[in-house]
Length: 454
Image (cartoon, rainbow, N blue to C red; front, side, top):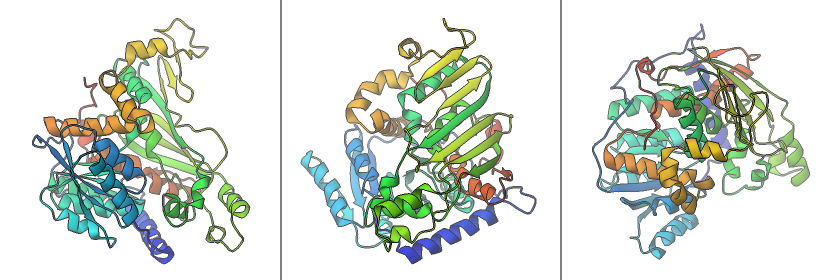
């Protein structure tokens, strides 16, 4: 989608930051829980759909991949696509027609052209893959139009926006799923299966991260992700992108389904890398050298759950180091850690827990998740981060067509995403602890843990 200009971006970001502080806590640091306007959507089941009719908002980079993968899933029909950038709009349309599929209706011309698309009555779900500032308003508009919303990460940017999305989902009884694709990775699914079978004993601690050197995106100035994402390094000092690592760990720990996030504390390293990169790669008068980069190169946030478990979440898209999502889960009987994959158990392993077992083949053979056993080969063939993207879409469509609850709901998206504004709040106040809202309004106490589906 076309980006805000600089003035619009700063205005939106400032308003977002203010809303986060106001809605995030009262004077006592106790989160405000708005009055419920509808019914809980935990375990929401909607009428079965013979064919899932799909609309897309935003097909520049991530969204174009979603169009391709969705077009390969039985029981779907891509009805309409919206993007303010004509070139990428036509690219998606041409891809579909070249595959022999019907040409979708195309919407463009203005930032809010998507609202015209939402007036259609032949769309069931909308896939939203736009800059972060658009996620909340587009998701809310989608649900209010009677359609299910599937939103790229993060779900929203402020505590206030999270509550608005939750309230809209409960009032409309529509799904609003943040599409956390990492939950559908082979390793993450296997570890979930291990956890459910009690391999690690009682869970104690988790570690998650998004460590991915992305300075090169600063060269995307007119279009693409870096054209808008770079700005956030000058607007928020906290964890800018918490959900990739946190999503799987949350599912291991049954967050919002028997446990929930209680409070967090956060601190950031100095912000040096972006400024140095800008000075190295751009002329002195370039816009990248006019920004004051405040987001610490490494942010570390610690979360405490109501049951007393601890989770470390890290964010670093600046420093030169190998990619990692961390993905560690520790229990009373042992630990799994990713990047690289390794396991150590007191009971249930031929090796001593004093040394890592790096040979994962026997563990895959015994604990591969049934979803991956069934669909893994097709998922890898259709691509998207090793197949996790395709498997996520396949599972979404399967649930909608068969009248089953989705694996992720609006409360998950809100809980995982709210770590970003709250981490910034903590960083700005000498790492003081900040309470995390209970978006389920207490329903987490009786909600059933995510099962191992076959």
